[in-house]
Image 1 (tube, helix red, strand yellow):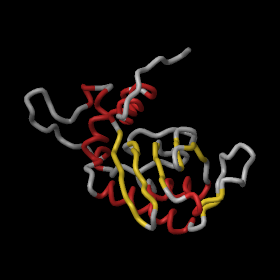
Image 2 (cartoon, helix red, strand yellow):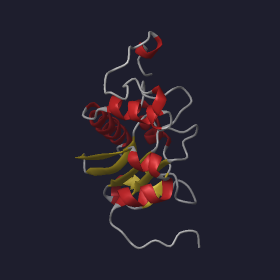
Image 3 (tube, one colour):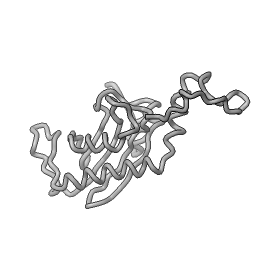
Length: 173
């Protein structure tokens, strides 16, 4: 037994327990309902990313799935926020009517085929982008970069901003 945890309905706490405080502190809740699909869960602040897409957890009606189209929607939602070769971290649950999806595409039931895949792609993309627009991502990015190196913080001990050099003025990409 690797983990023996009590049952909980708080997904945020469970994610933080399994994946650590870096990911737990960067969780951003997302929620939408459109076209008969309920999308809920968490995306992680763009300042925390990985070199592969293994931390993209997509659940359909409680079952873990992999879907290239939805993974592409995630990449598009994070476009301009992540460096090339970096992948977002997500924990998303989708609920939809069983007749809207074909689960018999792959023997392990990992891959599915959606009846309205384009609408689901658009819903996922717009939900995450709208959430990012409503969230101040710059404050989290600055806190993350100065967490490990407090001496690099441009705010001095007296609370006065330090002069900004030309290199620090380059926008986060």
